[in-house]
Length: 340
Length: 86
Image 1: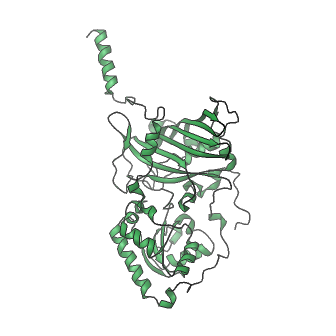
Image 2: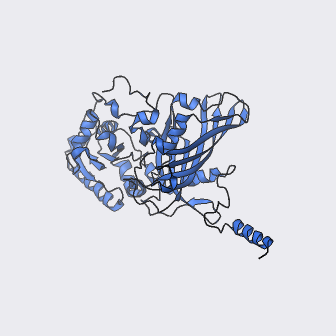
Image 3: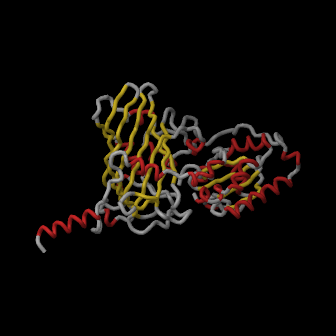
């Protein structure tokens, strides 16, 4: 998202967002589909601007609006801080032109929404574990070690972001039953495949295609207990993966040939993982419909994982691939009872 | 060229990593060296300026706070959540 690197890294825009507005973010894929009060409110606002969602098309952009739904300004210009500053100032001018009675605190009453369309709500499963996932285009230096790739800012220069979710039963399956150092377990197939298909992706330039089941050409992930004390189990994570859109990787339009490494630490007293650091790094090639501009040929790509402490609302943003929760969690996934 | 000289030359070339398609001279994931790669991939402080903004993730909650505070709403809406996807 170029806006992270451009508009919302600008000090004046940060100041305006913090002090003059209530800032909020949303994934348009959900917002433009949800059939509930929030979805209706959003569409009412968006319909006052240029993106009216014809044929279900995107309504993405940056909106300034009142709590009762009047659009003050719109622009899809997160990549241009100069334009965005003007848009925010324009919105504030229109806001200040409204009557003082309408602008005063409490003038608008907003209760709880009458209903929520659960088809478009994704929540971390109870007792589940969330990881932050970062992706970065890499290069190799003269020694063969990895270094940051020189890409154009906004076109793959920044780290891509996502989150990885595991259910309580899934993360518990990663704790070895035997506490003897040297004990090695295979990462259960549903977890290994979720990591490979939905998180070993190149999202450094936008929304990438995920890997299909058939694209998995090789996949091994293991955890080896390397240290066991009363208060800590330390596991070394290792693996290899070959993802390719054709059985013969040399002819595949898209692929990722990577190795994985990391350390997990489990606190038996707390009954939780306290460290979940890992990387996948290797050669990636190809691009998707919304990720044009890939570097030519096979180039280094790295993916890093770490525990999310869930203290920030950003930590609860669902995995990109959880738009299809049955693909992400498996066919046993169920929407919450009472969903519309 | 004597066989020993050929072997020596080949070994030197391999050591210097001069052959096309060579293996990496060092293994970036060996031992705990993967932690350097881990740190390299994570966002730098310069990439995290946008985190200084206290973004909410619920438009309805933003409506409530905006109404209570007497402020307008700034909504950043993208295909792919701005705080988490891509």
